[in-house]
Length: 453
Image (cartoon, rainbow, N blue to C red; front, top):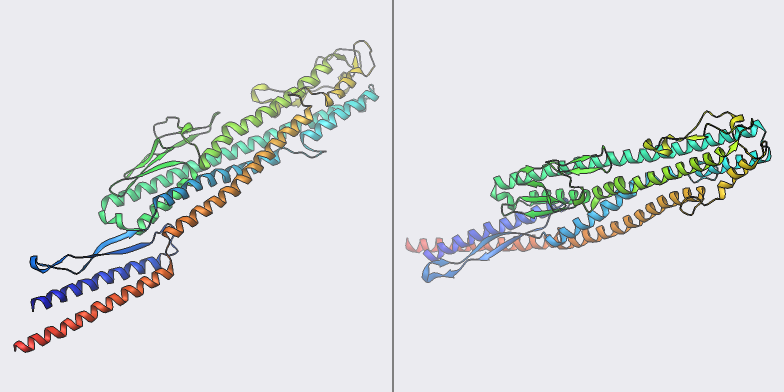
C-alpha cells in the first residue's frame, strides 16, 4: 500500500513538472516576436531511486535554461557600433556636401571665374568706368559666395553640436534605464530568471551599442555594470553616472560625472562619428576655406596695391578686407572703393592696363599648395564628396554585417514555432501518461482498500 501511495505521489509530481514545461512553451510562443527575447527550455531531472534508503525516484524540475548566447549578443553589439558610426557619419556628411557649390556659374568657383573675367575685360578698356564697376560687383559676389559657404559650414557644425547633445542625452537615458533594471534584479532574486527582464536589459545594451562603445560586466546578482569606452562608469547597481558634452569651444569635449575629459576614451558608434566630425573634419574644412579666402584677398590686394588708379594715385584702400580672428571666409567683404580708385595701370604707365592684366593672370597662377584658386576650391568640394561616398560604402557594408550578426544570433536563441509545437506535443503526451498512471494507481489503491474491507 505504501509503495502505491509513493508511486501516486511521484506521478502527481511529474504532472506538475510537465505542466510547468507547457507553461514555458506557452511563454516562448507568446514572446516569439518580442525584441530581445531568448528561447527558454524547461529542464527535467530524474530523482534518485533507491528504496533501501527511502529514495522513491520520480521527476523534478531542474529550472529553465536560457538560450541566450553571450558571444552572439556581443557580436551584434559590435556590428551595431560600426553601423551607428557609419550611419551618423553619412547623415552629417550629406549635409556638408551641398555646402560646396560646384556649379560652373555659381558658388565660389563660379564667382572666382567671373571676377577674373571682369579683370580681363578691364584690361581691354582700363579707363572705362563701367568695366571698373563690373570688377567691384564681381568682387562683391565673390565675397558673398565665401560668406555663404562659411555660413553653410557653421550650420553643419551647429547641427553636429545638436547631434552630440542628443546622443549624450540618449546615453544618459539608457544608463538610467539600466540602473532601474539593476535595482529590480537586486531586490528580487527570482528576477534573474525573468526572461522578460533579461530581454529588456539586452535591448537597452543593444540601443546603447549603436550610440557609444562600452563594456558591460554582468554581476552575480543579475545586474549589469556598464563602462563607457571600457573605462568610465555609466551604471553600476542602481547608481547612474551621467555624462555631458561641452561644445562651447574647440575641440568639443565629452565629460564624465566629475567633469573630467573622457573624449579620448570613445572609439566607436555614433558618438565617435560626431566627435570626429566636430573636432577634425569640419575644422579642417573651415581652415582650408579661410586659407583660400585669405589667399585670394591678399593676392588681389597685393597686385592692385602695386598700381595706380584712374587719377594716377597709388590706392590707399585695398579691394578686399577681412577679419582673421573671426575667419577670413565669413568676414570677407569689398571695401568702399570707388570705380575710379581701382588700380588698373602700373606706376610706370599711367592709363595703361598692366595691373589689370596681372590681376587677371592670377586665375591661372598656382599660388596655394600647387593649385590655382579654382582648383583648390574644387579639391575642397571633391574631398567632401569623397568623404560622403566612403561613408555610404561603409554604411552599406556595416548594414549587411549587422544583418548577418542578428541572423546568427536568431538561429541560436530565437523562438522557433515549429520546434515549440513539437515540445508542446511531447509535454502533453507525458502529462497524459502521468495522468493515466495516476488513474491506474487510483484504481489499484481502491482495489486494495476493498480487499481489506
